[in-house]
Length: 293
Image (tube, rainbow, N blue to C red; front, side, top):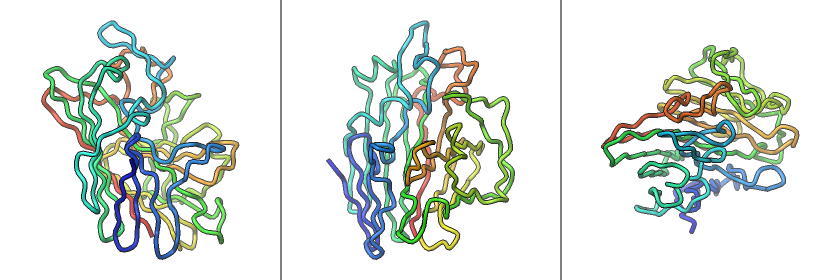
């Protein structure tokens, strides 16, 4: 089932499968901002990453001396959520633990995603993780929205850039294969706009450490005719990605509360780098938004 949110300018579609954002359409300019999932390049739109971000060493981890197998980015993107609240401009999707999730991830949880479309063409996305048990749970979560680039017929991929604010030098977390190397960051200088070039993604995503600082990214052309602003309220990292070697007409801006296993990970989930520990009877929230122009 697809849920539709709408205001004067935009129509937003979110599918219950994965609670995935599938479309943001500008009615006046007839612009589709969200990548439409051509499998020739990448068959998804904006998957939700939970309970891990990235890949585990050998796609497995241990907890309480038991081994569990979990594919890249976890299972939430491949399961159906339930719509638990809806208005013309808001929708809340929910996923709870079940026998399938328990076979992959031995924790009880409630995961909610709340989408809110406002009159200023902002789409707010809120993640809520609840632990109703007494023992702590361990998890990561993130978004993976892909945006059409170019967004019109008068520009090309290399006309676009990403600006990051605050304008400063960030730690860039490098990847070695699919695994992260946070002990040896390089420097990303946000004083210089990131011009989109396919060769920059030869080693996968560009990952910046944000340390939960409020951060915004603007994806636009040099002429700024149309684009997207992403605002991150409390994210730990943001990834910028397009598949290398495919000349794909999209780019992803990805807010993350987590990171792929490190190159020296020992496999114990409680030791995992950038893992979130949520104590019993506690809640977690992660918030970000998109503004379309």
